[in-house]
Amino acid sequence: KAGVTQTPRYLIKTRGQQVTLSCSPISGHRSVSWYQQTPGQGLQFLFEYFSETQRNKGNFPGRFSGRQFSNSRSEMNVSTLELGDSALYLCASSRTGPRADEQFFGPGTRLTVL
Amino acid sequence: AQSVSQHNHHVILSEAASLELGCNYSYGGTVNLFWYVQYPGQHLQLLLKYFSGDPLVKGIKGFEAEFIKSKFSFNLRKPSVQWSDTAEYFCAVNANNAGNNRKLIWGLGTSLAVNP
View 1 (cartoon, rainbow over the protein chains, first blue to last red):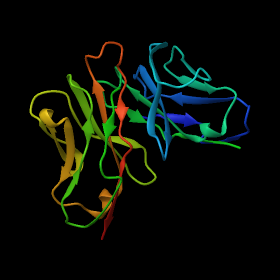
View 2: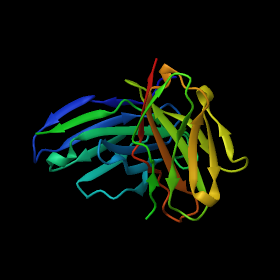
View 3: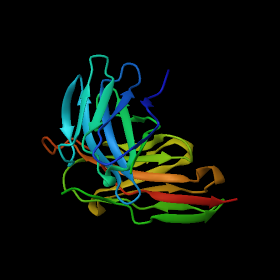
View 4: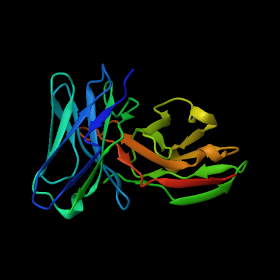
């Protein structure tokens, strides 16, 4: 069974640009969650999608958005990048959701904003 | 607001030493509790979880955790660590009857280094 895949693995952008990250969940998993991981803040929840609907959202500004497609693949978008957006962005999938299910994490996308 | 606190940020042990990593959360209702681990160069993976029942739960690789409701704690333990246990350990909590608040709250993680 293939694991969670994320593309690209590394990304360098400059302030003001926008970026789109992609996540393909494990086959059969309908829930996809996104996290931002930084050394000082740890893992912070961005949002969760289930069956193409955003089911929950963390405390991030509107510059952070996401969507999920009918095949459960998910994308997240960050517009007007700021230096503080530099982080590892993790995607995790589960069958029914992170509350009651084991989440399977991808390798992450390392975003550097210059 | 809900929060999760992991008391030890960095722990260094020798092989065969016993391990206990603390995790406390701030929510008075029913919770689901998780410990995840990230080995060097690998993805985050689930170590163990608690939803209900026996407060002592066993996970993979000889790890266990005890849920103490009165102390709002879910400490991770292993009687004898190995060099291969070197990793970052994360505690995560969800308040499962908090209305729309269905997200997991994560601790900042504990970095464990085991010397051979």
